[in-house]
Amino acid sequence: MNLLPRVSLHPDVVEAVASEEQESVWERLTSALCGWCGKGGLNKQLKRCGGCGVVFYCKKECQAAAWPKHKVVCRSKRTIDLNPKAAGFATPMKLVASIVDWAEVHKYALTIMAHALVRLDGGVDYNLKNGRVLVYVVSPNHGEDHPSRAFSLMMVKLTDMEDCTDIYQRWRESPMSNVKPEGPFFQSGNTSATPAGVIPATFIVGPSKPGGPPGSTIFTQSQYPLYPPSCHADSAPLDEPTADAFYDVMGVVEGFMTLDVVFRPPPGGVQKDNQAVAGQLARKGKGWRWERVMGAWLELDEILAEDFPPPKSGKSALELWTLFRSW
Image 1 (cartoon, one colour):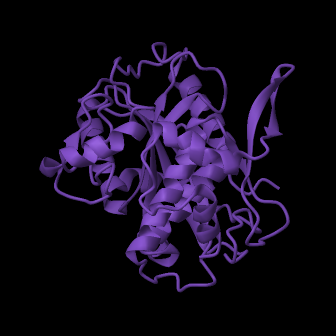
Image 2 (cartoon, one colour):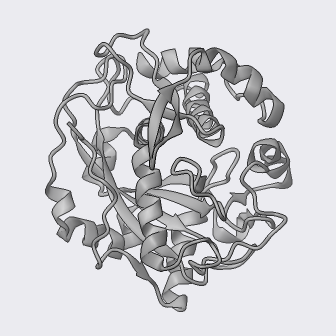
C-alpha cells in the first residue's frame, strides 16, 4: 500500500507567483534559520550564501564550518536559472513533474528528516495543532535525467502557517488534506504505528540567480504523516546532546541523498536494530529498478568524512540511527 500521496499537481497549487509577491514569500520561507547552527534571527542578522543565494548564515564562522558540506550542492560557479528550458525542462509542468518523481523516490528519506525536525521543534502535537508547514527548498541539477539525482536538497525547515497562509489554505482546500494515512509506513523503533495526523509540505525550486530573489519560483505541495514517539513524551524538550544528534540525523540522510542513495523502510516491523534499507536506482529497460546496496551504513562515515564536516554529536551514522529509532 502506498501510504504517502504523491506530490500534488493540482493547477491551483502549481504556479509562478508574481515577482513582488514571490520575493515576499521567498524571504519568509527561507530566511529564518542559520544553515549551520540552526539559530533564528532577524533577516538583517542573517546573510545569504553568495554562491547559491538559498542558505543563510548568522556569522562567518558558521558559513566556514558549513562549507565542506554545503559546497556539494552550492552553485557558486554558475547561475541558477529557473527558466524551465534552462533547467533542462521544456515546460513548467515538466519541471514540476520531475519534482514529483524525485520526491516520490526519496519520500522515506524526506519522512525521516521531517520527523527529526518535528522532534527538534515542539513535537508532533504542537506542529499539527499550530498548522505548521514543512518547507523543502530544492535546486535542479541541469541535464540530469536520473530520477534520484534530478534535484539537490538545499534546505528543510518548519514554518508557521502565518508565514505561508496561501500555501496552507490551498492545502486545506485540496482533496489531499482529507487523505488518511494508514499503518506504520514510518517505522521508527518504538514509534506508534498509528499516525497522529498529516503535516503539509511545500517544495520550492529556486532561486533564479545567486544572491537574489527568485525570478519564477515554482511551488508544489505534498504532505507527510507524523507519528508520535512512545518512549518519550511528545513535547519533551531535547537536551543538547540529543538535539545535536537529531540535527546530525538530518545531515546523514542528506548525505545519503547526495551520494545517490534511496532509502526504503526497514524490514520486519519496528524492531530497534532494523536499519533503513539503502539502495540505488539502476536502469532496467525503459524504466528504473531499485537495488539494495549492502554495507552502506558501515561505509557512510568514511565516505562522508571526505566531503562533510564531522557530526556535532560525535556519533557514527549507525549510532545516530539507533538513537533516532529508539526515541
